[in-house]
Image (cartoon, rainbow, N blue to C red):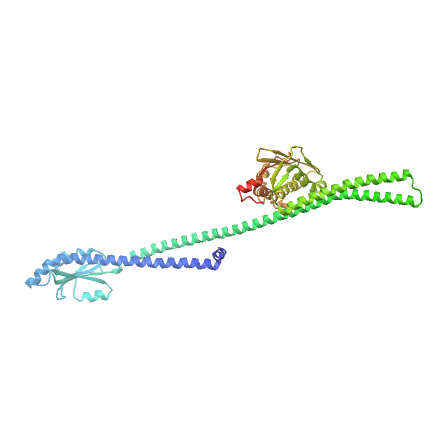
Length: 471
């Protein structure tokens, strides 16, 4: 198919096909003109033959009578004129001659250059043949005996004007057909080239979307790492401080022992500080351990994208925790509304990407003209098969045009600052194709935005029924 597309789009092939169409149509033109010319010639010959047959029937009785009685073998001018003149009224006829069985002229009439009908003389035969007139001879028979013949001289050029009209008509018709064929071919070629270009553009778009999705995955993983690192730094710092205090208290005890000044009060005071510091260190190290487990879990989701069971509340909380540094830097508060714990079977990676992208979109667009903002996430069970996630911000909101087009590819309100317009289209595709869900948005200018995501509770069942759903 690729080789065909390449050949079809080649300019050389295009010119060859156009030339071939013209050559074929020229051939058809000459064939049709020749065919019509042959038909006209045959028609003239047939008409001339009919004239000869009529004259033959008219003169046969008299010719036979003359043949039997051997009387004067010439017709009078009056008889000749009565029989032959009426036939010569046809424009294409030049002469009609009746010969005896010895090839002598019984009677004949010819048409002069001035259209006057005159007596045909014997020498006129060779003259007419020399001038290019065609002739047809029909024998006059009585039974099986030939008693004479009738020759009709006619002009094939009589229909030259008709042939010229036919040629002009065929030329016009052929030219129009050639134009139509070339036009259709060119339109088809342009349509095919447009189709090829559209298919290539679609392939490029799909590749770009896949690359953007992968980039989103890496960006989400980067945010995850940055967020976890930020979360880990605080408890690790406290643990280090606590351990330093333990080390300091242990050093004091050793110092008091060395100078023999260790009292019960000093010992108990330092031991109490050591116990408190140890408890603080253990508590914060446990926090670090839990964060590392969270990181491992989320990182595994980002690398595998498998379908598994998750607690929606816990998973969204973990995802937003990884974005804490981003929220902090943009002065955005996150609120997860209370509600029941819901277990769903889904693709955690895809859900994490959606939440991360919506958060980024809110920071970039929703809070673009605000110094602070609040993101609120709530979820509820719609029925036995679906849940809804409400992702709300108290940002600047959207116009009706933006609400209508927000999920369209390449639609953006920030193209002047480098916006591409694919982020929300990627979110839409992830929810529809990867999570088998739906997303819609409710927003007006000045009232913030509410993204409502409907997800199946058991994606595994959906995938088993519809294998086209991607993980």
